[in-house]
Amino acid sequence: MALLSPSSLVVLPLLVLVAMAARAGVATLLYDQIDITWGGDRSFFYMEQEGVDVLALCLEQTNGGSGFTSKDAYLFGRFDIDIMLVANNSAGTVTTFYVRQLIPSPPPPRPRRSACIGRRCVVLVSLMPDDVPWPYHDEIDLEFLGNSTGEPYTLHTNVFVNGAGGREQQFRLWFDPTTDFHTYSIEWNPKHIIILVDGTPVRVFKNDASRDVPFPTWQHMRLQGTLWNADQWATQGGRVKTDWTQAPFFAYYRNLRVTPCAPSPGVAWCGDEPRESTWFEQRLDMAALRKAQEEHMIYDYCVDEKRFKDKGFPKECTME
Ligand SMILES: *[C@@H]1O[C@H](CO)[C@@H](O)[C@H](O)[C@H]1NC(C)=O
Ligand SMILES: *[C@@H]1O[C@H](CO)[C@@H](O)[C@H](O)[C@H]1NC(C)=O
Image 1 (cartoon, rainbow, N blue to C red):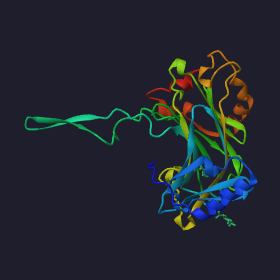
Image 2: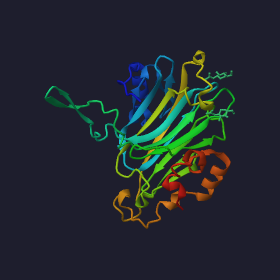
Image 3: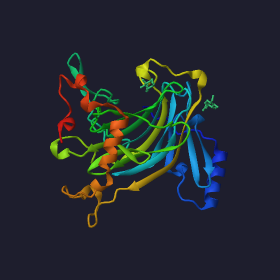
């Protein structure tokens, strides 16, 4: 997704907002934690109550969407945010919350080609290496796929490591995510990635790097959130399109909490946690996870036989 210049936010309300926060003596405003990095001209912050500001991301046909990126980057951590999704007819819209590796990441090797005119040959180095794989792309992804009024949202999740994703699991939310804020969380530690909805774990991706399953372990990640149009595929497989007469669409974010990863006592940092340590296991309620998956999971790549019948299931799907 293209990252455009910072938004031209209206300055005055923001000054007021910052002044209010300063007066209340409160610590963290979303406004201070993130930058609007994409299509921000109609997005805005407002003060919901003292010390709690809300970001309203805006999607209209002319901007194609908008998004934010956290100012800080993290290597492991727990990220909680409250989101209220696009209401009523949200078909075609996608609201996201994800972490991805710091941008820019180390530059991928550039493709070299040579061109010869007569006997003179030159090496051409492409400045836009679009055609090389995305070897450093790490991402842990929550995407909320909108729907027609009254039809359920889908929570689509994925994990990309070293440029490869294809690890989709989808869930039906068990509440109306458009009338209230709900808390969505990514816990990323050296042992596993856990995705939680209102504190209930719905997905776990284990670190089995020692058995050659890719896992993000070395790149700092930034948090991002976006609201964009994906009506080619998002709703009922792309059959239901965005109804632009309903635009502008808004999704609301508040209360971003970032908790640094804490290793077990005596260990210097999370990356050093001994392999045999069970420290991070206590953060995962397996019974709750199984129950949530039984009740709410609607797609799991690990059981999609049709998809993998030729090349076989990814390694992590066949390991205990
Ligand atoms: C959704 O529909 C209800 C009922 O028609 C209306 O009151 C409300 O304003 C709509 N919400 C949005 C965000 O358009
Ligand atoms: C939208 O609603 C339809 C009908 O209930 C459902 O089949 C579909 O999975 C829902 N979600 C999306 C993203 O299409």
